[in-house]
Image (cartoon, rainbow, N blue to C red):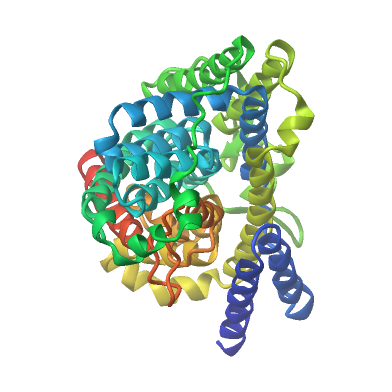
Length: 485
């Protein structure tokens, strides 16, 4: 027990130190923790989450090429036109814009261009920018569990299927989208009259007395409406949306019991068959080893036809769409690599690689102990796994990494798949400590200074909308899955 606690402290320390350095350090420093567990304590290394990593690479490459083509500028322009047409409702409309941008593109890093526009519209209308900016930043991350191409959604689908709960990405987002929209609107409603109005805020009014500050706050306008959108940029958006439509179509066909994908011969375990078999004297092989080796053993494994997995479909379609944008939309690969979307996505790959491998190594080595300690609790109150998801996410700045690291453990504890789907929104908790790039950028974009980190770190502008949004989203999602499943 002492070694188990000591090794857990090493895992937590690696995550804490990595989060302090940020960026690539989160995954790299997790490697130090992994090395200590493997070489220092002799734990068996877990399995790197390669499937999730490949999906992120494919989706981020496609989104990065879209950004390089200018297609994202067109999407931002459409959002800006709507916001400027209805400035009075920006506290509700801004989070909807950032939410759906993330849903379409699969990453929350597409909103950096929109954030200064939200702030500018708020200032021009006399609305405290903290109100829409705080909840809009939260919305940009909440959308990840609602995107059919996001790593968190695809990882949930593939890990669940491996554990007997077959749910595709469309079935997931049909539950998470309405739940998260309820959470966002609750957070927006709570933010509607948040803080003092600008004309009654003594701190803001004092700033306006300084001509330099006044010029900084009101002297410029942030907009994308003056950008000329080329036909190639619009074409790139249509290619991207077409790729999404293909993925959604395949998922919907599967959802209704059909299949439009190629099928292949696959070895799998026979239901109710033995977990291991003796091949020769002193040599025993598990069913997993037989499946991996492609051996058909009567009563243990069997040959079946299985369709192409959706995680591979997403990778093929996204990579192909990226290629079409390069060929037909004049998108420059070098510009994509230099863009914020691609760079942020690759940082996420490294983070998930290190964090998930570290977590899988630790939890895999102590699975029986975890089951003994937690089975009674999760049997009586299965929803409490949401608390664990949230707390891990506070340390890990990646919802995909939380799913990959924690979902196998949750299934091993005997928690039903529908319960885990119901608490999926709880994997977003990294707003709690305001060190995520979108939150920091939002603070910097707010020229009024009303969106703040806070003197005591935790009293920041994202805490209230974040807690309300995640809490309401999780409760609604849990109730929806209870009704459906």
